Length: 102
Image (cartoon, rainbow, N blue to C red; front, side):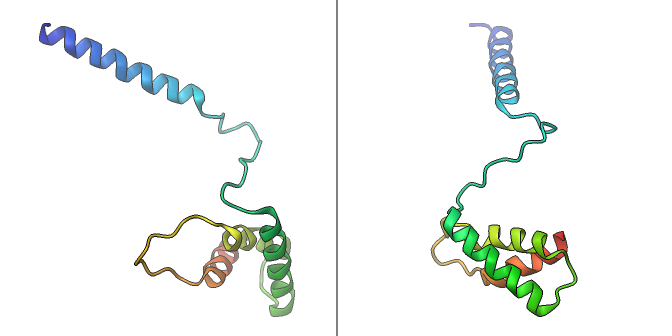
């Protein structure tokens, strides 16, 4: 097989893969929110309620509904952790990120 033919086949395969991947992605402007992956609904509701109460109690300078939703997502996220790594407190991380976002 000649070099030019191998390059053309590689380019066709790579281009086809990229095009297929692009068409499989949902449109970015669809307006639909993606499902929350790795979040248990009962844990999310509990965390959201607790963070809403915290927002009201602590007089956080943000929209408490937005704050509670953002913090609830982070707190109830159940992604696996890498053994031996040091992670920040979920509550502190969630509150800091929610305060910035809202």
